[in-house]
Image (cartoon, rainbow, N blue to C red; front, side, top):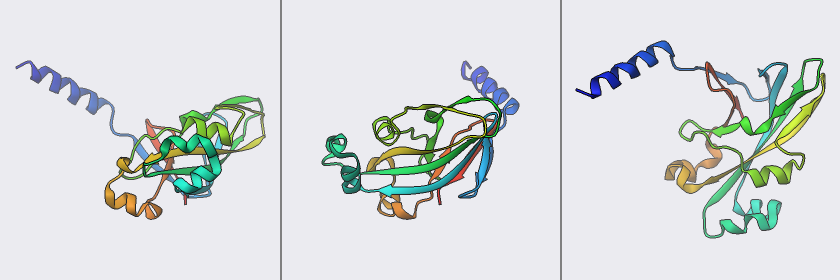
Length: 169
């Protein structure tokens, strides 16, 4: 009996707020994000543990004994407005069709971009940034992990009312 009001409330919320519209951005194309910004994925590089160790050195020593990979997504951000505005990088996530909401690897990101997670971008200015994500084998099904090079990754930022997926290849 106590469950009925809860179920009714869930139904009301779902009726009032439908699922987010999915928007897929073709690799290399720009798409608006927030006010006055355009974002474009330029490249994505999947790295195995050995490549991560070569690139990030001692930072990766904690991953020994684990099956671990990383993906570096290079993006270009353009401020199409006239004023300098802040752009927050930590809002980006990496996803696949079966792997959701993986936020950036803070240390890898800062090794790639020592200026930090918040950038001031002048009106008309473009900046290139490397977004860094780490992944463990237990985040994926065995089949997807073994074929990770064929998995489609998406850079995701906006969640509602539109969920925007920038294709990484």
